[in-house]
Length: 547
Image 1 (cartoon, one colour):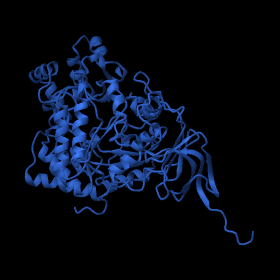
Image 2 (spheres, one colour):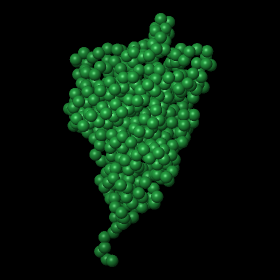
Image 3 (spheres, one colour):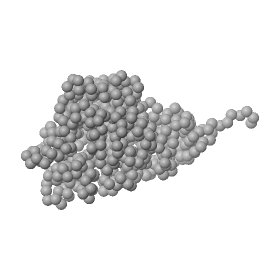
């Protein structure tokens, strides 16, 4: 008919899918239209044409997922793809568990360079703005965000020794936090079992978290203890939140060591009491019974003061070595030993070495290497740290499967892999990894949601998207709703599954069909594309926080 309006034209149309919109409400069948990187319409049926149309019949159409604890920063420098996460629908990688790429001074830059492993790169940035710009220029598939690392701030101002800040030094640390917040950080992140972070007292953390909170940020923490003093560590986090005036989140909620598996009820009670009192406490988790860190988590933090070189020198001193061995063999007093909590060196898996001569030991347990060398597990751990020039990547089997399953249903828990985003090729094959790098989200949606029914698909998607987005203060992502950025995860709920194991961790998850980041497909019918539309996602203090 003459004069009739042309039907709307879109960049992308997703038709006939089961829309799980991130709200936690009942899924519904409908169409989603995308134009200019945003969702512009969601309805049972949309008229019009698109440059690309996806038939989503039988598939779930969800908001892109948020990885609340990601170590994809170095893998993204290596290839920009974050493929193991993209293949699970992750569209936002959040960095900053204690260590962050910025803000840094020369000392911080030297620390980043010195601690690089298989992936080597120049540290050309100092501010968070510069870091984000460098990553966007490099070209990345997912979006990225970051907390300001409390450890990074401490190293910038105090170095790595066991010292306490003078008032002027604490003020300088707070300025660095505000600088990061003004450039888009999400808040302040800490990791309190590791040196030099472990040297920070509660008042220092309150001061830094206050600087973050006044800029709209949250405090997020690897607790000071996740085992014998877990409840006291939760209390410290609640205190920091209350006294700083901001919300707080527990990184990778767990109860480490068989003797602590019965503490989940008490942790839940503490968190929910704080929430009822108006202190916003949340948590995230990975969906496995083993954690992954380094052999530093098997040794007292006093011996690590000053950084790796001083740590190594102390381990070579016979008298200090004897003291360290004695402490490693007993029940930890004032520090947390993951070797002790694992209960046996057979439950300690070696994942990554820097020294090429040691790489053949990758995939063996600490017990196996100790038997090969004819030494105790504790002596072997010390020797490996000395010989490798690093803390040695390590997995510790610590948690109870029943507790993991129960946590997947907690309404205030989101999800983070605590791992890199990798691919079984190139530089990523030089070391092993934890299976969570390839399967954390797929394991949730397959094993726990579909098979064990610990929670519903709608609520799992909510806690992968809208819930963490709200916690981070992100207003334009996390929902399949008109006006939102077009980050989408389209998958088959009947087949999505993880395949990575501890023995063979470098195996992609399956079942994710399409992933869009800012409206562009980075996964198309199960195949990675060359698109690199990822951008920095800024926090609530961006350009608003007084430095």
